Structure formats: C-alpha cells, structure tokens
Length: 191
Image 1 (cartoon, rainbow, N blue to C red):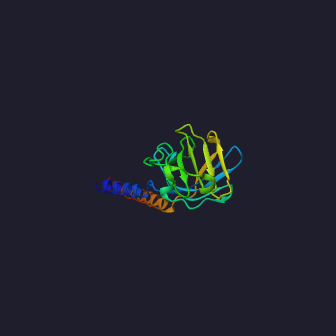
Image 2 (image 1 turned 135 degrees about the horizontal axis):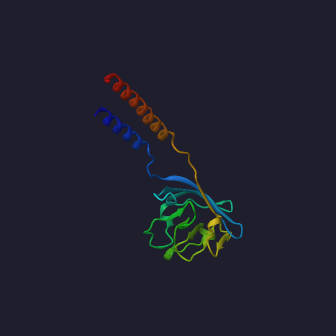
Image 3 (image 1 turned 60 degrees about the vertical axis):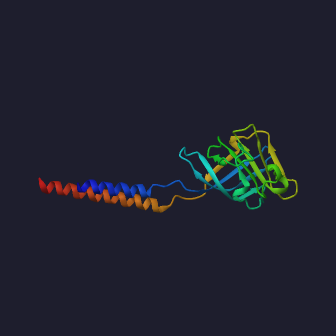
C-alpha cells in the first residue's frame, strides 16, 4: 500500500514536469524567387502533431531588412477563410501546411491590403495561392512568388526548454530510487 502511494506521488511529479502546450517564439524566414527575404519571430503554439503551429501573434517581421509596422491580432487572418477571420492562422515546421495572411496596418475596405505601402505578407498551401510580401515602406517594395516553395521556408524554436521541467524529472527519479532502495531493505529485513 505504501509503495502504491509513493509511485502515485512520483507519477504526479512527472506529470507536473511534462511541458504543456503554450505559446512560444519561433524564428522564421522565406526566400523569394527574386532573392527577397521575409524573416522574423512569431509567437505560436505547437500542436499535438509536432509540426503545426497555431499563430498567436508576430513579435517582429522584416522584409529585405526593413521592419514591418507592429502587427496586432486584428491584422492576422487565415487565407483559407479570408476575410472572415474565423479560422486559426497557422504554419508548420516542415512547411507542408501554411495558412496565414497579415496586413501590418490593418485590412482596409473589403479586406484589401497594399503590401508595398502598408506592409504585410501571406502564404497558403490550402488554396492555389503563391506567397507575397511587402515592407510597407511606401517605396513600392514587394515580392510575389507564383507558387510557394516549401524548401525556401525555415523555422526553428527561439527558446530553450525550461530547466524547471528537468528539475522535476530529476526529483521524481531520485525519489523513485530512494523508495526502491527502502522497499528492498524492508523486504530483506522481513525475510
């Protein structure tokens, strides 16, 4: 009975140490056919398939080295249900699933966005739509690829795993070893 409670406590400690799905920063980049580059950091939640990232926001984005204006939640949509905005914008680590449309200074009448003047980008593998971006620098700087190329997409986690999880796991393993040694000694004394 005692060791059943002990094992249950260890299981609880391990469960508390397991990382929960939470938003984390990811650095991304995409190189266009004309060598233009869109890059930045998004805030997203990795899903259970360990590939899809639901986008919660963008921390910073640059197009050819020019910073886009700050992007708020209302300026991010899913391409597949645009302009409704009811679906979750998302990208994937592998680049196989892309569905996001951003207008950095807000969508104007009818959901339009002038990328060169307002700044924004969009890409989708769900619709027959290429990849497009603009700096919003008023210089007319924008790029459009007729088709999205998965090999030109890169994304990686921008954070290191929290050492707190490792500490809880070490504690649980230490308690398990301690408990097994006590249990073994108690059995030897009974015999």
